[in-house]
Image (cartoon, rainbow, N blue to C red):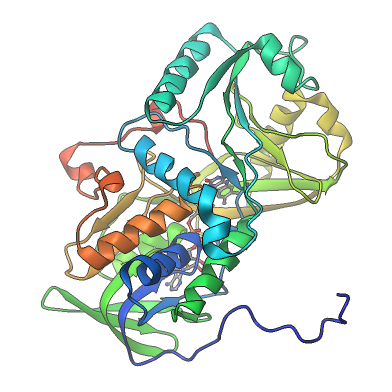
Length: 403
Ligand code: FAD
């Protein structure tokens, strides 16, 4: 602004697609961009392209409530999210980009003795994994979050599980940081390029059809989040995924008031305050399958009610905007990073409500899989065939807190 907006250069090139690449990533969201970055950085593959049907970061990576945490319970998930949080902690230096990663602490509230037990177990699992967790009693929570309604409410607060290394990051900046760093390593980022078909010969992937013509490739990664079922169907795959809408909300900018990430334990509501001052919050899915990136009013009402129950002061803030994103929901709430039945075709999907925090490790492990044909050790459980064999990773059933 001080220079009259002159002399600014684009943060990445805008190349025309080449006829052939060593690898193509379909989807320019957080996971696709980080996959491309780690393919180039960790595996020296630079003749690669990311094909994005819209603009980079226009999907869920720019629509989420930005919560970053490593508090998963089940072996299989917890080592993956632990790995991801460590990558987050070095991300700004790695990308040379300010993604505003803020480890302000996440507090999951509990409201009954049973919930306290469940959170104590979760906290122990987190500590066993090498991450941090502290169980707070009511006074411990009151000291940190004095503005909550502790007693005069339908669900009095019994305490909370504090995860100090949890927090938030600026979601768009994560997409832009990975995009710029991938571009600098030679990756072609091709926007307005929708993949409309996957070319397969004798069980081997040969390339893709796009709205900008056919592009050949030795390897192809499907990394399209809410559109996973549609794109995988182009290769004859029927995925165990349903696409549902999740909404989020932001208020007008306020002076600093909420300095943690808080999640309510008796309804779907989680909240933090952005550096610009907006209160950013969300709730549960809209609970019908849809590809429309917009939400319905009954969920808006539910989220507002949960917010009012937890912190009545929020009623004085004006909601500025709300929006929706398309979630790739698996039946067990855990993701897939795996090969497919087609040689050279790989799949990264099933991120449910919680794939923002997974962006660094997902890309890291998807790149490992695409480059070596072997799963990285922290994603061994993220197999596609678990839905056929019954080796589910049922993190939904263990009461994980959304986002
Ligand atoms: P996306 O950004 O959606 O990327 C997929 C890309 O693929 C899109 O850009 C799309 O245009 C492109 N694409 C699709 N089809 C094609 C095609 N045929 N050809 C080319 N390109 C194609 N997670 C957290 O960890 N913490 C949170 O607090 C959190 N809150 C959330 C709140 C909301 C409201 C929403 C919607 C999500 C939230 N999530 C959260 C989940 C997280 O945002 C997603 O799991 C994650 O962003 C999905 O991966 P992605 O970034 O790669 O997806």
